[in-house]
Image (cartoon, rainbow, N blue to C red; front, side, top):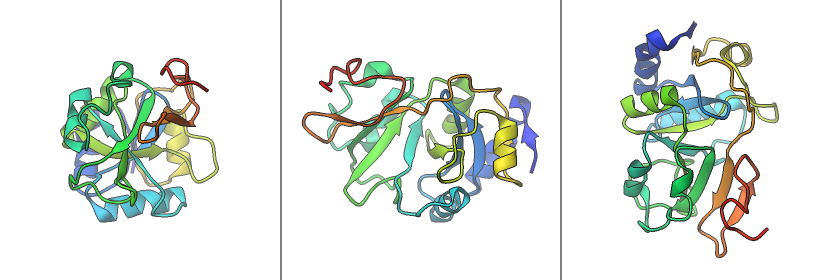
Amino acid sequence: MPIVGPDRIAEVIACIRAGGVAGIPTDTVYGLAALPDHRGALAALADLKGRDRDQPVAALLDTPEGATRFLDDPAALERVRRFWPGALTAVVRARPSGLLPPVATEAGTVGLRVPSDDLARAVIRACGGILAVSSANTHGAPPCLDADDVAEAFPGLLVLDGGRREGGVASTVVDLTSDPPRILRAGPISASDLGIEG
């Protein structure tokens, strides 16, 4: 499948909505995107990356307000909502919502993020407001920063070209289910930014 530009975004949306996996740009790196309620798509995403099918995958939303339907506690995101859209993934307690493992984990959590990239949010919005997205790289390799990198790493994958991602830094991941919250993966937003003592 080809690399396509924003003028052919409908092809990428159709691929994902049909249960496929596609490469899309986010505000941090390129990602592999799939429906979060489609077992075959989630399995294909894990297999593409060469990792265990039960390894958690973040859910990307098109708006901060869209997170509410997945929260066990509506106030859970108060600490981080001001960083959205942006490079922050928040792990929260999930309410039963149709999200499948590994998006919804066995521990009853889900990692949520709203990317600050218009093209990414347009794809997410057209696919129901939420997508399972993992960085576009095989297990252990650095994330892809442009569409050509994605196409080379995943031959045959449909890739939406949104230009090069300059930062190349994956999102910060913060666990809001622990008290106090803790950073699970360092990224552009620091513990001090979040008001968390390191």
